[in-house]
Image 1: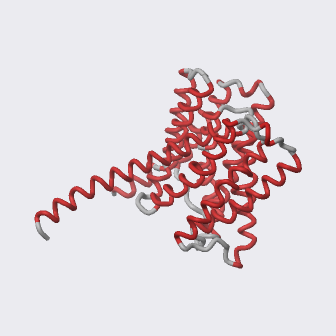
Image 2: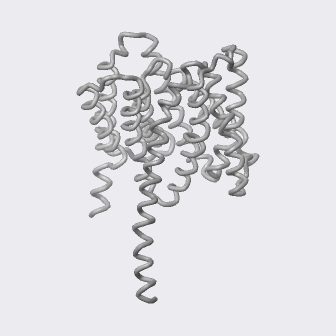
Image 3: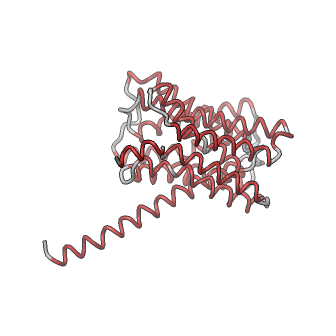
Length: 311
């Protein structure tokens, strides 16, 4: 290898690292702005219809992505029941619950509520996969949920039934997503990421939209330009763009590092949401949010396991 080859290789490594860091930031921004997009979408579109339209917008691009990757869109025959589980338990019901919840809960707080999802993954992994939970992770869960309770209390959600119900809906969506992730690891590990997403998104989008037409009776002529723009953003950028970049990063970052997206995106969501909604960020919210994210970060980096690796 010549000196010029060595110098060229040296330049490639920092560039590759910079590209990876920028893409990681793109995912954090994409997922961090999703919550404001949902908030704007449901301002003039009912939640069922909004969730359906989002997926119907995203579905054709997922088909193109699957075709470009030459990935199958149909689940294997032995996974037909699992396909129904994914379409309902990961896409249909949770995204309706998220849209419903954002009618009553601020977008930043919605992101914080949903950021509990990796904690539920940890709990379900212990229940279904018999994975070990470390003492430091239990402490992190306690700190995180204690901080979440204080955030909800400080935001006054305990005073309004509809807001509390909205918060419960978002938490339920996080629980359902976590359950699907764990069951997928247990029973659907052989299903590719593209296959897992493409057809379920299309079926869920159609089902949600038709159900919305029958139940909510939306007048699409009354949908505002802001809501249409938000739906387009959710379908094209947040769903498809975020998915493609996340899929790219899965091959270049460790799962632990990539999982910190769930710790970072709520910060973007709070900043962007408070700016749009004209809300005031109190010191209590900043403090409890910091504690919550630190607590959930501990669940991803158990002290005992890290010390065990060093010894």
